[in-house]
Length: 263
Image: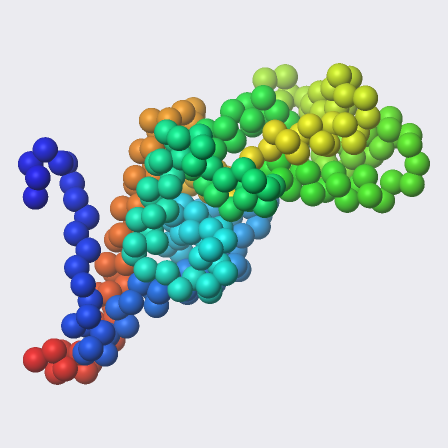
């Protein structure tokens, strides 16, 4: 081990284990984790993040879950795919050109330190919104159902329904809810104009889910700047490594024939 490096992850080949009948392929560990996320991905549900974390799910599971190329192949992934995701998250932080921007759908599937930081900045500038992508979905549905052009009434309706649904944060300093003029600034001509501008600024759904997960698990982090974000992502990676190690240990214990086959 290089003495100048504080820690290293060594990945050993598992061909011998597979030959002996051990379920040691990474995909055998990983696919069930994606099913756990499928059943617990409602970020507006109270305690959502801690429930997932208690199940052993990490932020890196969520990052991989949203990678379209992995989902398209049924999450038939290996550890090198995890390494690719880690590399992308770090590289995209340094190189803005590395983040796909050819179509809106690309923004929905890629997570990077840079895009996570952009998301936290967005929340700071829009403190009345908890989950921007969910909010935009509800806003679109309300606009589509509107039959007239009474934008003032539509704004009032949207404001009331969003507040009742819990999509707006309370103003902790003054003890009041944000007002309609806070939500729909007068700088926008109408609600469509506001919706389009908000859509352009809002980071993708994958970023929102990962950021919400981190906020829900690491509640002691008061300011999501680069250093604490990198630190918790490193912690989450170590958790994923530990989960894989525990999985392999369980498989060895459950496979009585493994020891005989390996002799």
